[in-house]
Image 1 (cartoon, rainbow, N blue to C red):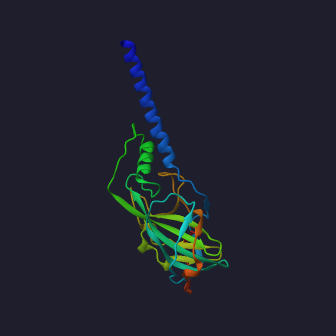
Image 2: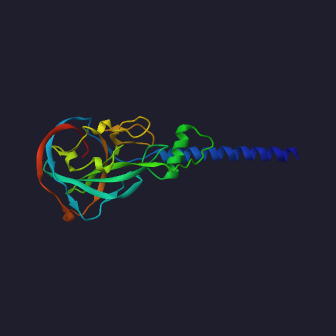
Image 3: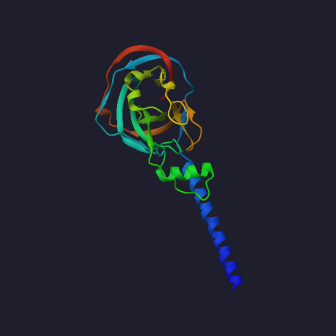
Length: 236
């Protein structure tokens, strides 16, 4: 009888180990975001042109991009010429939760990542009702069909209209004057960039380099309105 009890306890011990190992292996996988990242550098004084608002009636599809938990659809806010190319700037809301603060992957995967980062054993699914939004900023090279996607942490769509984007000699910049005073969670200030893993450090001045399916014939651009010199960070 004792032998059977020992075997049962040993089997139970192994089962618990497998459960814990699976939970944390799954959590570590869930933390990784992936994607091809390019970095343009930090904020600097930039001079360029502000173009008018754009209109786009087609579909926008990011191919093999990072696993963003999107909300709603893409909206074209600015389009113009920079460095001999035509760029269009789209924004779209992304859902984040109060546990991780990041808008990547699904609720369950974010919960698993949170458990691993906080060393919660066994890894429980800590569901939360509270959620808030960040803004995805997608700058598309219309002719090439490639784009640069960054996340505006602590920003909302009404913070980002056409006047915020500067079309300079080598790309598109976001005017960050005033935005740096915004906050979003845990005393963190608003910022633009990307991450390599959920709850990891924010790489400011960087973007995910992605392929984008766009219908150029359905894009209407305006014209340059005025020149501006401001403190900005490159987003495409």
